[in-house]
Image (cartoon, rainbow, N blue to C red; front, side, top):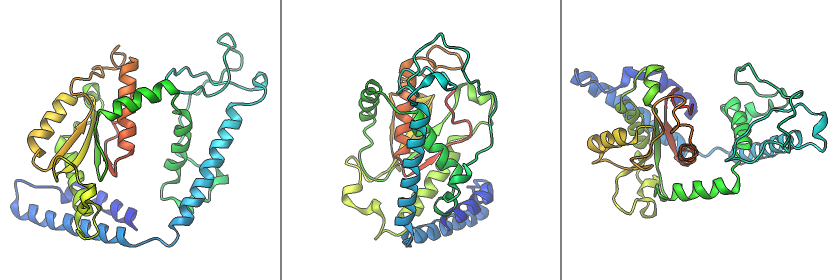
Length: 298
């Protein structure tokens, strides 16, 4: 039900956005946003009697997928298998293949397919609202298994973000060369959805986790927001200037460089990759994330 309401709100889109030119329309839109937020907060209070079953089934399927991938990628005899070669030093190897001279069984992937789920896993439809996304997440989880050295670096970098415990939202703002490929989105477009989510979370004060003393930040009672971006100095400064009275911002080093274009040495460096991975892991810990289709890594 929550997802259906969220889809309805997404469909309304800009029709309920802030309108500085028309006070009457802005007031009406504000009322609609509050009503949606109230409904969503009430839905969250309704316990799903099948939630434990959903989680149990999804966990079992996840284990099955992981076991199947491991069995496929780590066979007893690699000589009779086709091989996809991927050299990614920060991660665990995808197989036991270690012969760079072997060329005759290398698989070249040239097509991208629509989001699909294997028919044998059609049970997912009953237990998850977005089966293709969940299934792809299991594949990515296997591929992005960090080796020990990478884990140490990521944990060290993440600790500098100081996001602590409690409710936190996140945004990923992609700029640099992406401004030439995708329509520019002002920061306020991201913050519109962040405001909406926090309003929804805080609607029922008595049951809101944000009202717990243990959940509030040590520095203030402000809303918490993690910012991931390839232009941290510009984005964080704008956020501080415009929303600093309401939000406490967390982010990577303000001077970190991700390069300005595809192929830039800074963007292809190991330091840049570690920074991106740390930000992705932190976004995954957020209760709500706002991003765009331009929020990809290349």
